[in-house]
Amino acid sequence: MGIDFQGRVAIVTGAGGGLGRQHALALAQRGAKVLVNDLGGAVDGSGGTVTAAQAVVDEIRAAGGEALANGASVTDFAAVEAMVQQAIDAWGRVDILVNNAGILRDKSFAKMDMADFRLVVDVHLMGAANCCKAVWPHMVAQQYGRIVMTTSSTGLYGNFGQANYGAAKLAQVGLMQTLAIEGAKYNIHVNALAPTAATRMTEGLMPQEVLDALKPEAVVPAMLVLAHESAPSRTILCAGAGTFEAAHITLTQGIHLGIGADVPEQLAARLAEVTERAGEQVPQSGAAQGTNEVGKALAR
Ligand SMILES: NC(=O)c1ccc[n+]([C@@H]2O[C@H](COP(=O)([O-])OP(=O)(O)OC[C@H]3O[C@@H](n4cnc5c(N)ncnc54)[C@H](O)[C@@H]3O)[C@@H](O)[C@H]2O)c1
Image 1 (cartoon, rainbow, N blue to C red):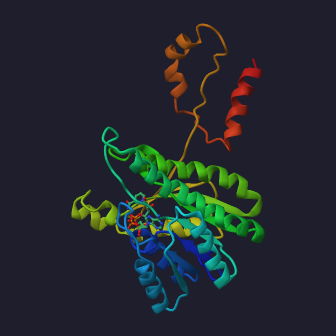
Image 2: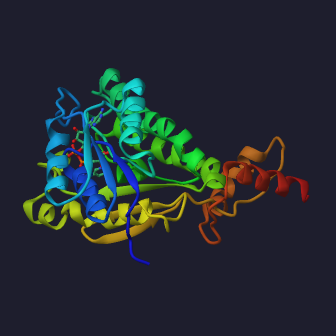
Image 3: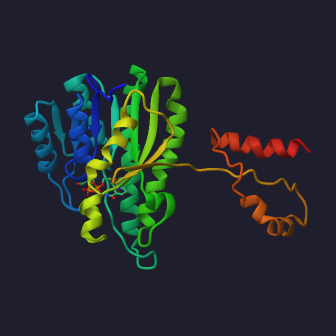
């Protein structure tokens, strides 16, 4: 099956540069009408102008595609609702949402200002939630939707100096897990992409040779697969430099110890059995994990 988006309408947030720009160009090139959102600020989220989004729209139009620019901050729910309405007014529907907008405020946790922690959570988590909330009723009504969150290896595995960013990025995976479950009956598929790419966000962090290998274009195929009609749901795809992997939040088989005064000592003594990875599974939901625990207790 070709990865084609004819007749589809996509919103890509933070698409004035970096990965978002590549996502928007690729979706448009494969037939989607694209609303290009970008606040147009600096990498730390300060400032703002719609010029960056407009430049990407101009590129798409020059290549024969259809696009609209929007300068809303994803943190402003009223502006996000107006952004979705802009797409609906122009094209009648929204099929795809790529939550890509993001900022960095890196510092070791000891030195981190809580205002910078809150701002990073606001842009990544609340920004994604605002956009999901605004497109959700339209996707439910049309019984179709594809949502791509942008998580990060920092959220999945941690990186020095990025406590705020890592927390906000893994929060998007949490949002994805439940929206995928709630969206299933409406044919709304929700997935997460963990990109690695040389953009202004990663400037100065890696040597030039590595930056050259990490072209943002190399991430785009993963986004296209997650945004397409044939997309899976509840999948975390990692993509960088042309390599693609899946990350899973797994659960070990564990052991049942019951309730008793010496359970702390038993648990400490048998911790290696609890963390043993053979036979790991990915539960279908949080409730399924709880049911599994109760099941072991009742089986005694
Ligand atoms: N580059 C990487 O290696 C990497 C790794 C993991 C995750 N990511 C994520 O990928 C996404 C894209 O990052 P990038 O590397 O292309 O960086 P980038 O700085 O080039 O792109 C981020 C874009 O988001 C926009 N933006 C910021 N705040 C916004 C807001 N409130 N509303 C609307 N737009 C806003 C910025 O103006 C910018 O154009 C981000 O979510 C980032 O966290 C990137």
